[in-house]
Image (cartoon, rainbow, N blue to C red):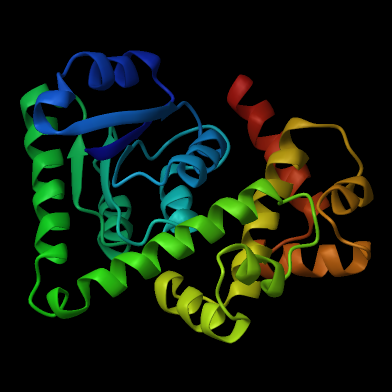
Length: 255
């Protein structure tokens, strides 16, 4: 079965897509639903969906930022935007992110089904492409190894994670694993871990009252300066600036 994930801050929309369509008859399983961008990122990392339906305007991380941040995690996935905003700038960004479809609310169930099935067909076409066939088993094995490695990273995100430890976990030599990981994800192992830890830090910054140095320690960083430098390199701002901006945005939303 293909795995479908739904992200929208409107429960009625989520429930309508999840419960109003008999997905199993199409060979599709809804593996999870998220109601804000932060939840969506966490769910995506855990479930590794094949198809993602998401809104643009959501609390926390918006839909487009969410897509950008998880693109390297699920490079094979197809993204479908369902939004109430019919703005050219949004559509243009969606195109740049290689989104499968941009649907404007309200959307009929039949349209959603057809769009999801088109995404399934697109995935199948990639898998059946002539250039994929000769090395299909090797590619599948490599993909599985990297997904296993990602699971290890997610489970040990609060520890100091080394390439050697993960390579040993998936039973590969460090050098081969390093090349395989970069090939499958499009980024070096070390950079991927930095991004994962930054995403977890963002969750802790917006859902807890922990000090920045405490979050750094929780995530296995020995130096708070190094943690701040990594966070700023990945996010474009310091942890405190991110927390302040997020709190301000949340307050404005409440008002």
